[in-house]
Image 1 (cartoon, helix red, strand yellow):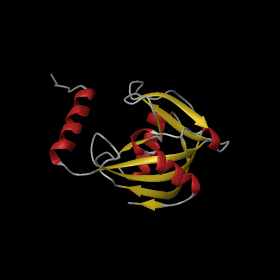
Image 2: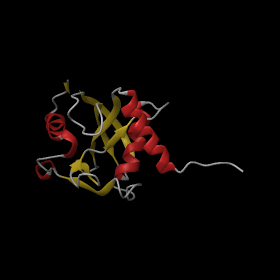
Image 3: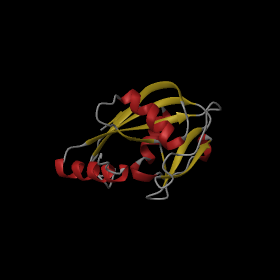
Length: 156
């Protein structure tokens, strides 16, 4: 008989390890553009606010692999074309959960193909015209999106 640890338990172990190891976590968010050039955002379950789709880099994964996986998991879209590096953000106050170093990239994506994989994490996916994008994004991403939309690569 094989002992299996529930996937949710592994998530808890990983989050705990991040705090115990006290090292920055590498994350990736995407300025994802739908075929009609609208910006794809997700509404987060933890804050109820809108955010760029993305997440943390998993062990053994490249940023490019993470990009495709996170876009499908969170936004239900397929990566059509990876775009430019738009910024790197590392201020410890940006994410209340841990100190993250967040890489921001552009991407062309498909239309939404399916619902987010975790409906507790992502409540909704929507594509916004540039003039419809919410002024305030969750997790300190407002200036990240504004800089990316202006084409101003930024790093901190």
